[in-house]
Amino acid sequence: MSTLEFNEFAKLDIRIGKVIKAEKVPSSKKLLHLEIDIGGNVRSCVGGIAEIYNPESLVGKNVAVVTNLKPRTLFGFESQVMLLAAIDKDNQSNISLLTPDKSVAAGSKVT
Image 1 (cartoon, one colour):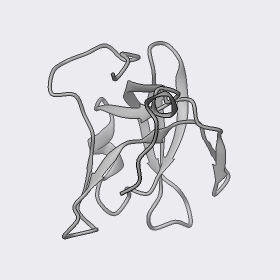
Image 2 (cartoon, helix red, strand yellow; image 1 turned 30 degrees about the horizontal axis):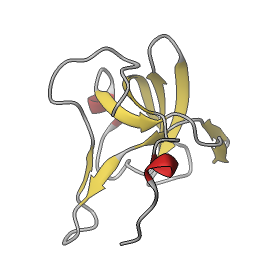
Image 3 (cartoon, helix red, strand yellow; image 1 turned 45 degrees about the horizontal axis):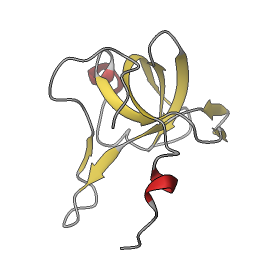
């Protein structure tokens, strides 16, 4: 595992967002396209979680996202945020989105 200086980590803007729309990406088995409300600012997200989560189960869910990465276009969708998830070291197909354990407002900063 590599290390980085705190000031590098501090550059990340990690927030809680609320999934307001989710759909499968056509012609992809692994990708979902999500629209995530980050405190009044809706961002597009493409994530490789379609084999783990069905889109309907994600709508209304609060998730942790990195908001200040450079956008990327995947399968015709611009991904403006990155979902944060845990991947089981013993079972790489066991993926769990990071979610707050209490109710917090969309846009709340993760520190």
